[in-house]
Amino acid sequence: MAMEKRIAKSRIEEALTWRYAVKKFDSGKDLSHEQMNSILAALQLTPTSMGLQLMKFIVIKDEKLKEACVPLAYNQRQVADCSHLLVLCRVDEVREEHITSYVEQTAIIRGLKVPSRQLDGFESMLRSTLKMSREQQVKWMDNQVYLALGNLLTACAVEGIDACPMEGFMPDKVNELLGLTEKGLQSVILCPIGFRSKEDKYASFPKVRRDSTELIEYL
View 1 (cartoon, rainbow, N blue to C red):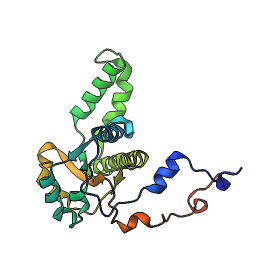
View 2: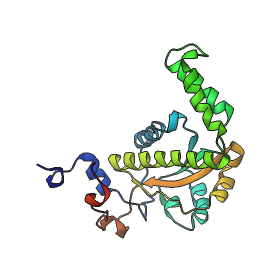
View 3: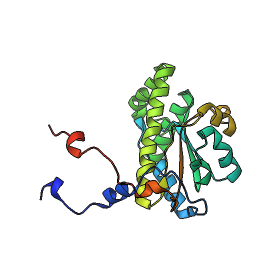
View 4: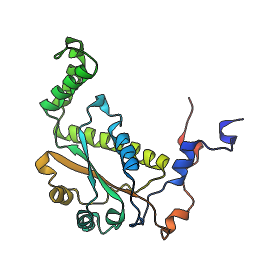
């Protein structure tokens, strides 16, 4: 049977069809420790350029802190009513220590001597990022955070956890509230996660996506 004719959906298709950007969370339902561990593992295992992972994920559970984020997210209540608010951040710039620590970690995990001449070529490739302009670094690292977001949303869908990725917030204000600048971090995306409210009318809306024939081309 041709791919486009098949009836049964795979688990991943069912999960991605089920998910949507939640507009109203059930503030009385929290993720379990096991569910959070699964989601955080997915973030940790996110593939990034050269594996550098120049990012950090801030997990906010404190109710007062989540509430303080509401005006910084243009009064979108999802950031307060969710179970956990995730702030996906990148480092402010690529530094020498990011390269050396990663090369050392790679050598140790792979059972090589530290320092290892076997990794000289790899380290040289990593060091090319230090030569990027600040603008190039920011764009490159932002892209890596979006890879993490994609992994996060898929993992949430598979686990039956709701999410709402948000670019609509004030990064500078969030940085200030959470003390991120002092830590050498910059917020890129907010993503509240939890469970949809029965009152969220958007949960019943049919998913709208372009037909695969428009999006996919075979050569």
